[in-house]
Length: 203
Image 1: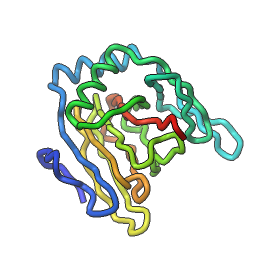
Image 2: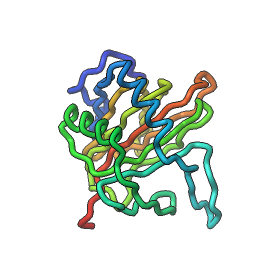
Image 3: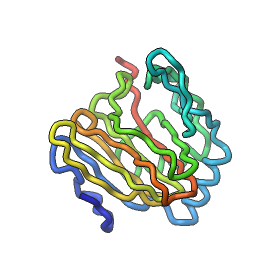
């Protein structure tokens, strides 16, 4: 099922086992262009690392990790230490929180240079994350298809993430659904994705 409709902030795109809300564009085109430029030029991007069968590999996609504190965050068997917020990130975070009603203390950023770069099926179920906490995904740059797949039924849902848009995943979404950013040969420009999260310091 492909959602390409005007955003309804109260519409749960998942038929069961979780909650995904698409807010559409929460930034004007001018604002989105500005933040894309700032993210692209000022973020301390690094090639993503992963440990596969004991061997460290690097992806073309680049990542960065920012937070309230220098939290350590582990995924793909690699641990990262968070950098302090930039002024632009704090501004985006504040707007995201005001629109969504959620609160976040960290942000994992991804830079996809073109449609040839994507993300395989996965769930954001890392031990450090607040259980069933909300994840706010803000997109700048190239519009890309984003997909969900139910872990048991295999049901799939696709939607188009627009320049300056916000997607919220919460509840049991990560427990029962996987998501991915499929590669495409139709997109040649870059995309910056900010995933605001809550690290549970008590765990």
